[in-house]
Length: 330
Image (tube, rainbow, N blue to C red):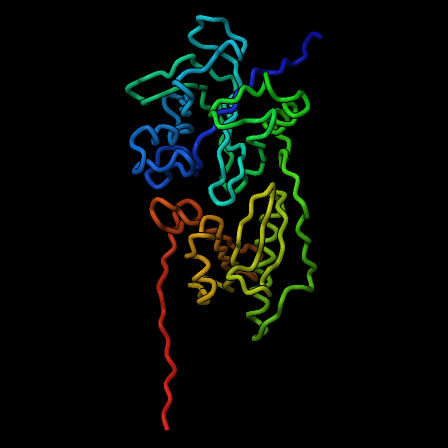
């Protein structure tokens, strides 16, 4: 049919999990490909996948033998590259071990052999910068099955347009084209949405209002992006909210202030925040000016390479431990 859009050749490439893939030393890939310091320079190459250089992005993935069979992307034997490919990048969330779409290159050039260059150590795909999109870390919710018949296995390259069923491929393409989706995640039991009257109250009255307002800000922030939010404050876990989407779980502790200033963590919260089992999924949500018409939310997350807690563009959390005592006299 004249004017109909053809389905692009689609290639999945699997890499380690990082925040921005722009070469920052505190943003090394986490996962089976490890950290740079553990695996040498090769582990660093994928950290540049969304760094713009001369108006283009150059992508690396640890493909088998450093080569891609272009005949599976519509090419001919002997071709050095094919153009117009949709490259979908996936990575495994290191906290819960599930695979998600983390970005894509449209109209990409895919090479038959790994390209070695001075400006980029190794390149297997490239595309114009305006055709490259990285999904922000906390918005990565399109779940991709793995190690299941008809889905990616252990190899980094997966020829989606050749292997995926037409309905499944159509769902991927719709997401890339702007549709909201949790992908192929099917939860056993969706978490219940808490009723407004389930939130605990505390004295004094002002503190209760500030904390309630702060929680409302955080809930609204996540729900607008399709997350499910459940209160777990009464369970004394060390955080207030379970925030879930497509199998990803964030453990969110909410702190509110009527103005600016510091916040205090209880011993239980501080222990949970530092626990290696939880800290990659732990979020400290600080809401300042919580009772105003313009409350300010800053979300802090743990950066495993630097060992710091970062929020927003340049906020770094300073944690000062406090020791108390009880003084008694007769």
